[in-house]
Length: 93
Image (cartoon, rainbow, N blue to C red; front, side):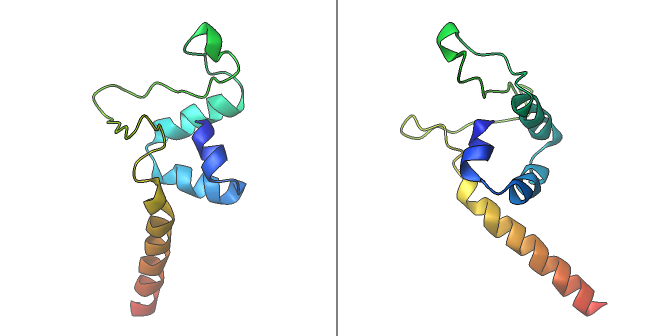
């Protein structure tokens, strides 16, 4: 969950991005911000930013042992596309 803080430093934009994800991401992020996520290991006490998603409804791709979400760079484009489509709908009305 720390990824959202690291990759999206602007709070308003980060919340817009979180709304694009399933609701359990928002729930996990809020638990992270409240300091209520449990660490994975003893060594992870100061790095507890992991939230277990519902097995069977998610998938993770790791490339070069990097835990950065693979398609994260597309999120700003998705937000822009959504805004453009909304503007186009309003123009057509």
